[in-house]
Image (tube, rainbow over all chains, first blue to last red):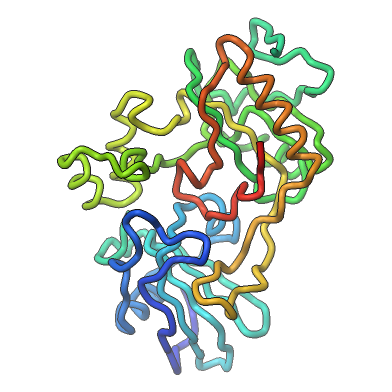
Length: 110
Length: 203
């Protein structure tokens, strides 16, 4: 995905599910990313449309999430999910959806 | 009980035909379950438009006003379930070797392992289930960014009219010989989908 250079990256959530789906019985404790892995995903992921992210591709509630700022001044919340998908919801309302089939490395699952 | 003709189409004043033969991917001699979905779109027409070019779709579509359309023959399987979740994992009753294999793999591996099993040791799959789509889009989740872990988007609530039609259709299907299906699931229960899809469908 052709994103601008990242100027700040913070992880605020890690190895958790959603309030309505905790991935029982396996849970989400096995999906934990560090900063380098987040950057690696964002660098390797390709853009997909919203329908692909929400409806077509495999969905996992297990995710890491945090804040991100780019060199072009935009900022927002990034989310990366266990089944190689992700999103960036910008503070201005724009969003991008991501899929990284090349991310066939732990702790992703495919 | 529904009257079904030799082409697998329902003859009932409450079911309108909008058949897309390209959705029918082979015979479906046995029906073991019914899977309830939401379309991800706001109108029935958007689903019909996508069905013109897709091999993915379900047997029925229920519009927001409760209108029921049949979109594929009940004698044909359609691609509506996706990759299967593990039934024994969900029920906490996997055999030890099965559990070990399932825990080491992701959705594709789980699906491969599950598809080898005969029903009822797996969830109903494309080859033995009827799909019912409910028209319904997803909207930004007001809890996103405020509640820890909240999804970015959530599906809209199923309308009362949709639920009334769903209850009617399920009752009819389950009492019709050859399509009587003992199990009804929301899509996320059997496949790797967001938990808000069809969460408000009731029967």
